[in-house]
Length: 429
Image 1 (cartoon, rainbow, N blue to C red):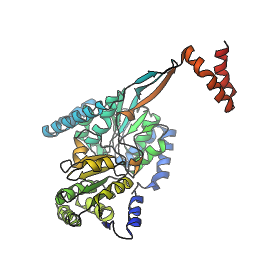
Image 2 (tube, rainbow, N blue to C red):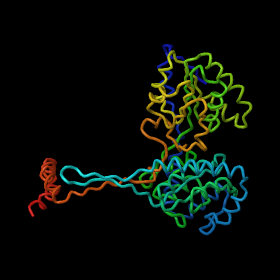
Image 3 (cartoon, helix red, strand yellow):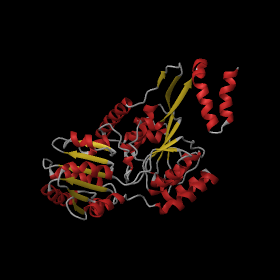
Image 4 (cartoon, rainbow, N blue to C red):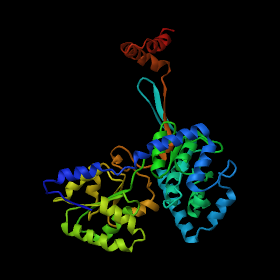
């Protein structure tokens, strides 16, 4: 765990190194993934079946690859009542938040009589990747599928590895709540390729979303353009900005809530209180042994954790923008000024009573967020990701008369004679 102080001579260099280390997935798998994609493109389902047998120890055929409705129902029936109630509440809140952000069509007519506007239409089919190992998170099913459902996507299909044939009951319930029509028992880069190319019986998708390991992330990156994707996701991140009013044990718990995700996750504290910084470090050490996820969380904290003490808390906004963290918690007596000052963040959690895990599960905003400093230029998953904006124009005779000559003049200036002709031929006639 690194400790930095804003007043030291080496602070700028050490902070720049912290920002530069984005802990990205190993691109060394790129060649392996490319080979898998080419094999699926050439051999189709037979390659998918072979890779599933090798990696997941599951034999599949064209008839058995889809999870039957009876299997889905049986899995859902095993979900405890309390878990079902919590997941239903989460689904309702996520749906309400995303319904409120659905983009609207619009138009206007200018002084020349030209009408122009835009309309939003959903993609026809979206694919959802759901990890099937340690990271089989039903919350991710809801966060990825419900925005697609709200957008009006015609069909949502899901792929999930089922090592040794096991289905995750909570993931099956989440799929039911989010309107997933079909589920296929495959995973890895081969599942992404099958959805991107269309590999009977798996249908070709227009969009693929959902988290996965390095092979899955790399497959999405390589197939972008063939299919739309949500984002190339990296390891989890949290930045806590706190003043002396914050409780050290609460901060420590919040930092560990991200550290336990992955050995290369990153948890950072920025504060103007050296006393608080020391107390947080002590509390991290006290809480770590109480976690079932101690091994992963400790590896993350020791390798990538950081505590930064600044002379003035106002300095934190610029540091936060440089880090462009996935999650930013403002554990401040008055979080409003800092919230207004920060430009780059995936999602911001205001006040000591808004721990990041509330956003992960049940708050409403999406937990699929940019990592690796990408919050500088992108935002979290939303309804708009599953929709396309189409602009339209209706000039009419009056509008063409007003705009035609300037259009043709610019076309002439660019040496595009047919462009100019397409306008002038109408005006001459």
